[in-house]
Length: 363
Image (cartoon, rainbow, N blue to C red; front, side, top):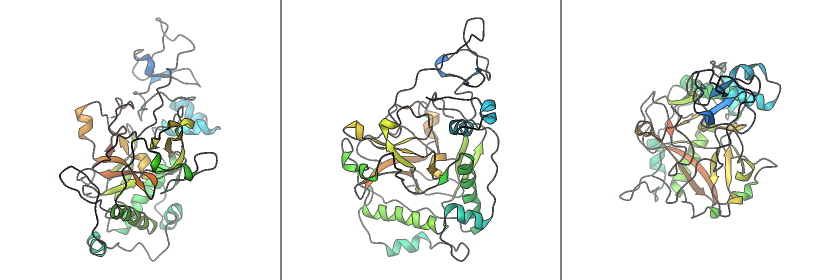
């Protein structure tokens, strides 16, 4: 499956200039990495703005995909410097310790995600039942030979397990200083909702079929009622926060919509955020939009990218990131592109059909 036009899933901003050392740290006048001891790959060697020590972006845990544009603090300095918003953000990016777990208390979880209160968490209607009630309609074209429709996720039957899944996402959001949102948000001073017009997409944007749009709406309604997708956010010392399937997930299942604050690309070309996603690649480029999930986001922010420079990396990909027009507005979806086994980590290609974003240090 996939749109007919090419897509950019990350900003088109060039890689910022490498940080040069302010003082020599070895005999040949360069800075050596505190982790590996090498002074090679100087263009990927970060210099801490707090202690002047260097470390490669690929020696950090979790790895950084590129050199950040703004100030950067090593893990030690970031932990000690929490008085400014940027320091807090840096600390979240380079966090290596297990974060404090969100309490597994139903009332706190219900309030955190603004779940519509109802008796317990009743088991959802099986997808088969929904299927009989919905009208047959044209579906998303996934290949030249046949077409298939998108599927809603199937929640775990155990309500306690669903609470555990929600608590894992609440842990990650809290640790990164974000709040939960399951929709695109439009904040004063950024791009207004009126700027999100799929008709501006260069080359045109594929329209999500009506039945698939209804399936996406169904998924969101289910989540509002506490019927959660079977996903766990786990913390890995190498990859940072990452997402695992908590039960078998079928091919073409909607995993989530990529959400966050919508802004103009021109305002974010030098942003050092590691999760910015292209929403609209417009003609003219001044109207291009991106999704910024640092302050408001859902589980999409914690699904990791693959190393698309190697065949081994591409084999890990089990999600497809696609952009669609829904009622004239752009949306970005993550959809399973094959069956996913329980316990399998989720990965998608940040670049889509274009390989302009550096992913060669992704694990």
